Amino acid sequence: MTLMSIDVGGDIGLEVHPDVDQFIRIEQGQGLVQMGGRKDRLEFERNVSEDDAIMIPAGTWHNVTNTGHVPLKLYSIYAPPEHPFGTVHRTKAEAMAAYR
Image 1 (tube, helix red, strand yellow):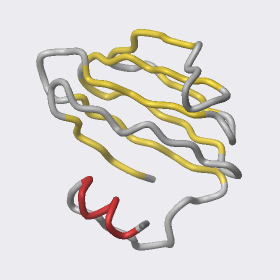
Image 2 (image 1 turned 120 degrees about the vertical axis):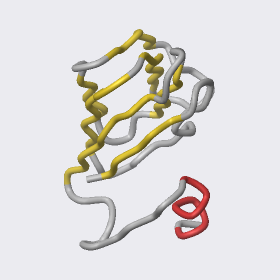
Image 3 (image 1 turned 45 degrees about the vertical axis):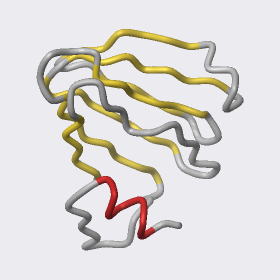
């Protein structure tokens, strides 16, 4: 499980997980979900807010952008797990550095 707090105007970063399905649940705030089969073709867009859930199939490019006025708080579950048990990254920058 990954917990995220995305600043106003920020995003999770355009990404794809080739072999991992992802579930995202919005706990606070408002955002825009974009998904597609190619990095340059995100043909699915939906506005999301508190209590919404997003299912992202493996191999789907996706991003979530905070479009609200407060931090966007969400959690994400991967199947199978994306990170080793006990992994903790205190910031997005720390997480990105660990997987380069």
